[in-house]
Length: 194
Image (tube, rainbow, N blue to C red; front, top):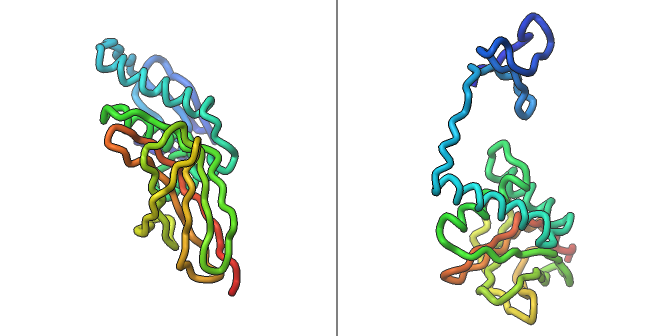
């Protein structure tokens, strides 16, 4: 990507110039590219991939993700260290699952309760039991400890114990059944002081 400063002797430029150059700003970075008419062969593989994206967008808008769920996806995007939003990382997880031939089960409305100096309870909604696992740790990039969930009617329940007092913990949840996929963003909570 070519980065430009003061394009066309101005402070900013956008749009097409004489069917040869395109000026744009992407995530705050000014850029100039050669104008190219994109190819669109509409192959069956391409149509299938577009269908995955369409289904992912529909899941994002209709599965019931709360503001906390969206914030968790935003934190997961930051942890990836790529210029993505929470929506983008959700799309990545969703499309990766579909490409692998897995059925996506949305994990929504995650809530932390009963926080003490040494433990907490976590619940997350899911349509059916797909073997839920919670990964946690004290860093958003390293969550190596896991806890299996208990499925009850329409959600998983997790119990965390043996935690350190007055410590910030990060966690995410996934479906681990053989033919299933689904995962949350990264949530946080802080244990109580002892």
